Image 1 (cartoon, rainbow, N blue to C red):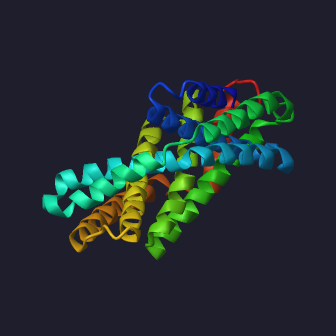
Image 2 (cartoon, helix red, strand yellow; image 1 turned 90 degrees about the vertical axis):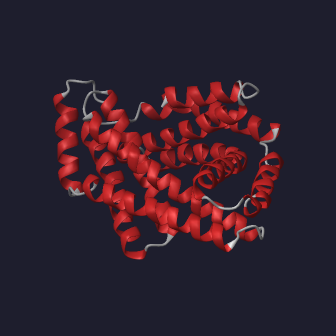
Image 3 (tube, rainbow, N blue to C red; image 1 turned 90 degrees about the horizontal axis):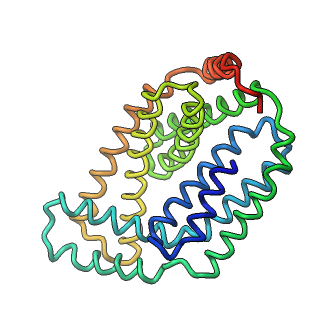
Length: 272
């Protein structure tokens, strides 16, 4: 946890150098921290878990608008390059997104508040980590996140709405980050982590296109041709995600818990 939040604090302290990159990395680091908290959740008192999760959420919220605006510009440019749409149909949306990006730069006040929240969270780490328990609790946390991601995949398959895929994406990314942590300990095969990363890319791309369509529509810049193109591209990414997810989440959560507990216990590592 200290490494994740320490990296975030460093990026925020050096924000003037490559601001968009550092905000992106800060938000990723905060998501990793939340994934770690979810992994440790069965071993933590509810008050500790809620306090640290809220701190990560609040810090990320202060960085959200600028990052989201930059993502939409990137998603738009990537899509129109391969769309074959006429230039006159994309000029106005392009200008709107560029102006929106400039208008939503993160304020110095938001940056200062985000950094303060992260520094305070770092200072509290020794307090709550002293209460961590056994590998059994860690295995429970890993299986719980897996179960949530698996259930949300099934809901997305049944419902088909973009928001259901976004909900699945959130927990699939938590599972990915937790899997990366276990891989770093030599407890999980790199191939599974690579496949989870590819799944997260598909789900993230689909969500970006959904938000892009909604943002352009609200501003009156979504032409029928662009709407059709973005919709087809999003549905293609969602189909790919479901294909990957069916394989990645085929096991029952109970067997995942058992396997992770066995790996943790056999590794000879010091219990948390």
